Image (cartoon, one colour):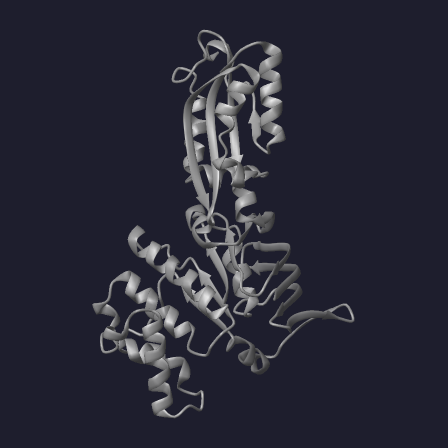
Length: 355
């Protein structure tokens, strides 16, 4: 487990002080894929670099795999020595946006580099390198140089190199930001596979909610150095609280398109009477035939205008925009019934006539 408590980091520049991390506390369980999302300058990269002391925080405690990396003693901030930290870092791999490969070394040489001073014999290193290359699907590229590889292949080499010392934790700092969509999907699938196969804890830094949606179990949203919202990914998508979280979700979720169209009254007004409602179906409720059941049970007409389903970490999250017509009391009873079935109901999203 990785535990951060009240971590702070300020960069003291010549002309100003920049508070990059402000009183951040997080718990990341073993085997989780934990996403940290925020816009540029939110503090997410500084936060992840504090975990392996590439950046030293000013205060707060950090524990990695049961080892205290920083702590408070007698009111004073303490940290592991560089020598002690080297041992901890062997169990923490890290991959970056721009790969950081050695241009003059082959793929084999890049993956073997972290093993140079491991005490392993040459044959043991060779065996380990090809084991890693097979793991990332690059056994046929061992003799190639980085300049001969695609962006996705370069990142696979970087991942293999990061896994050389059998780490328990992998830090991914915007590792897919420089890749095209196809390569991004491939790398995310690989990370998901490694998480399951190796029980690898992955902390994934990104500014793309689609990446979080694709593979993360939990997510922390950062803004101005603080964690402003945190939870499992499905819950965050279904019930975002903070404005910045809603903005991230709206930037890529197909469900947000429903809200955009619903707010454009000229497109889907309620001329002829009736109330326009949004119904949000979560998990098991998505597959239920509630629309037809409610129509029969309460004598109301439900005209579906828009509908869509997102898949969040293997679970469905659906939304429907519908015009509901009928006796006022029956409409109220129908909406109450939806709520009793764990369907979220948003009423009067557009007033009659689209006004």
